[in-house]
Length: 443
Image: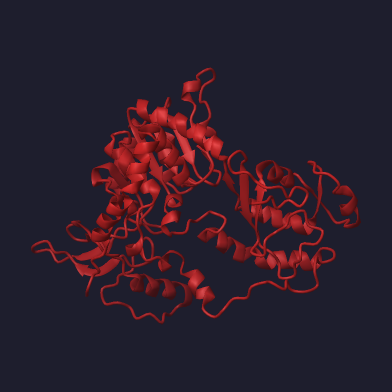
């Protein structure tokens, strides 16, 4: 891969160099002329970390005649058109950072040592650990919320390019892709387009299960509702799923819980109430069992009833939607482990959702915080030494893919040969996963 800064253009060596990947919103009239960045037609670009940092310091100008003479060398005072500066600002919001392979190995070695000495390690996981399984994240450069943000600013970008000086091109990009019929529907489906029954644990899911089995990780707290932690083999006692699980439903009346092999949610009921709220009507027929939730406005009922003797209460899903309160018992369990924690490892989360992110704030004062994620978080500084002169209180901040980081940690703990042998056993684990997911529900 090559750096997209036009004044660099050199190869990026993943082994020894850190990089940044971004995505911006390109106008319909665009050919890249007089631009510092060789933007891909989908708005993506990749840079050496120093090149990206220098690009952010570039100064906007409306005097296009100065650009050619001023760009003879790369420096922090480099000029950039106001139009491209607007693209860079949008790209900054999506920036994903990747440490070099050498840096990741170094940090993984440190964390492996901490795991061996920790008395109560807790792992906190977010959407980033499930992207390799086929679920999109939220704040990545192609995340669900990022795409929604880009849709909102696209008109603004068009206006900037039409109004500020000469447009880079008076014609539409010849290779610009057009939407095909049905594309918008497919994109808008988001997580609803995921077949959860077909998802299988990633390397990170399996590795965390292994670390729990080795008694190096005492508890896993997750924001994910995909059920992959449980499928990987982590028991209920070692797992707090703060935002629910699409394979678990519970009785409204007696609160008995059922763990299913099939996706339990009734999306039709929720879609009906969502349409009524947004448009005043719906083409979806309201299911007879559907009931509007007072807190989130959707329907949690699944259409099944409790199987406990004499109950017959309606079953509802356990997913926490916007506005819903977290289940008190599960949240309390997570906080109890966080308070005992002397090493917390956060994987694949931007740590922006409350009250889940508050768990990071209650770990022991002398505890270490480790964060591995592609995006920056508000807790990155907490990974630094907490007290002057006490380096052992320092944590670790790694930018990159969770699978890569966890693989290096596991390699340090069990050795390269045992790791290869364990990875070779994945086909047998897949057979087990299939048994727990292949039983399709029949009405």
